Structures are given as structure tokens and as C-alpha cells.
Image (cartoon, rainbow, N blue to C red; front, side):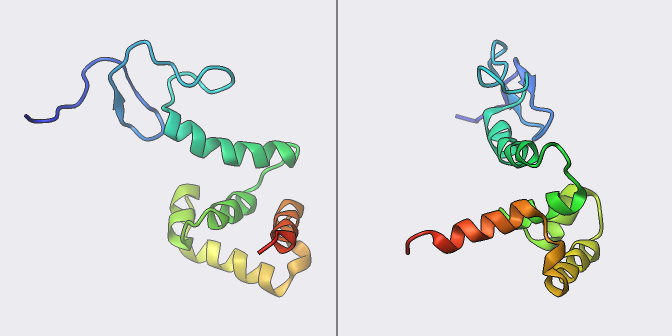
Length: 117
């Protein structure tokens, strides 16, 4: 038996995969319409941090968030549409001047320090 792509439904605009259920319109509630659950779940982490910051989200914040999620410098750069060297330079600058680090990143690091081992 050969697996085939579903023919009905929609194509998730984020991951470009086709979903076969024409009645599926994303998770109920506050999720965007016609986005698959996997993509919505991965987007929600970033949206949560953006909202905590009050909506003022810059490329540096997005790069740091992606790096915290385990993305490499190259992968984060690809997502943001900048060069890998740019992301590397942002991180290097923050290592030299930690006072420039975003508050949400400092809070995240402090929370990790107090977690029991």
C-alpha cells in the first residue's frame, strides 16, 4: 500500500504540509485559522514571550528566543532572514555587554538558577 498526500482540506501556510480534513480550522479558541496544530504550538511559545514584553519585539529578541529553543546560529539566521554572522555578532556583543541583554532573557536565566536540581 502506497501512502498518498491527502487531497482535501488545506495547506498550512507555515509548514506547507497538506491536511486532509476540510473541516479542520486550527485548534479551537485563540489559534489562527487554518494553521496546523504543530505549527501553532511552536508559534505560541514565541507569542507568549512577545506578549510578556508588551509587544515590543525586535530581531535580537527573536534570535535569542530561537537560540534558547535549541536552534543553531545558522538556523536562527535563516528564520530571521539575516546572515549567520549577524546572529553570531549579536551574541558576541551581549557577552561583552551583558547589561544590554533583554529583561525577559535575564528573568529566564534567573528562573533556571533557582530550579532544584
